[in-house]
Length: 136
Image 1 (cartoon, rainbow, N blue to C red):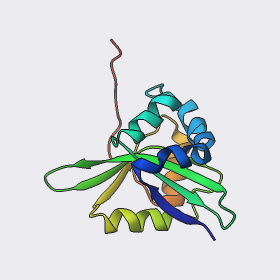
Image 2: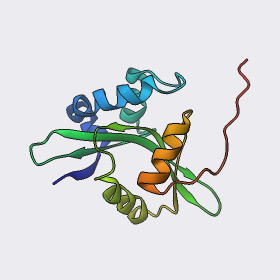
Image 3: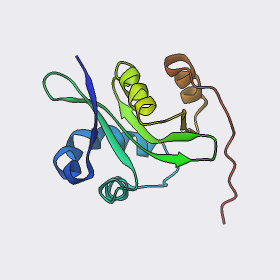
Image 4: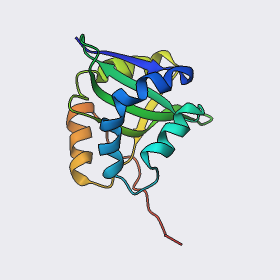
């Protein structure tokens, strides 16, 4: 059985090594917004939240880092990075946590069409916006 839990900021140092390889692979597919060390610092400082999925043997199967975005009509949990071999199985636990935390939606971004299709198929995500950027 896999159990998902939020790692409190005062325990990030004890659990980070379990999640690091999963998050590093996710960072490698991103647009260089964070290094793994910068992401860890963001979590340690309480700017973002680390959730990990552990099996019965305390092996990390997947990890997720994100943060809350509060809008007048929504409380959205934005996934900054998600990685692991098995993110589908713990997904319902994560969704329950978001709902129990007052969340009304979950958002995430990707630069790959294959991830758009995967998130639609596995998790039920639908495109909301296309993020555009002008590099300066």
